Image (cartoon, rainbow, N blue to C red; front, top):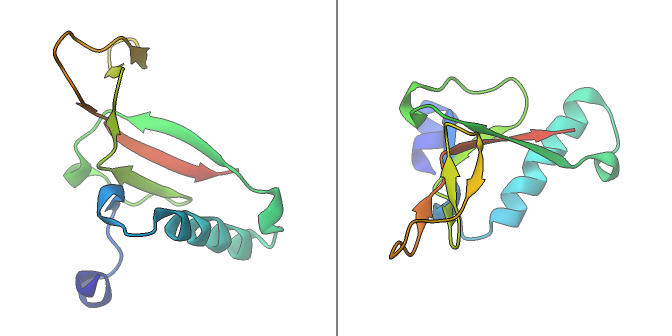
Length: 103
């Protein structure tokens, strides 16, 4: 968090490192609502999986990029751009970066 103050907001946020991620996501919706002068109650999230390295991403104009999510019982197939059954003997599968876009 000190880096956010010194260096500015990151291009991609580590969701697993947040103590209260609901508050963070509400702040994302609130920022969007204030920017476009629309009621926050009318907003929800649209999700897009980004198959790119988090260090190469530039912050999106709207919403946030999130990393650090894991799947249990499924895995992400980048070729098909969908969830598939996880491999045998794999307990958790890392999820690629996800764009949380308020709509």
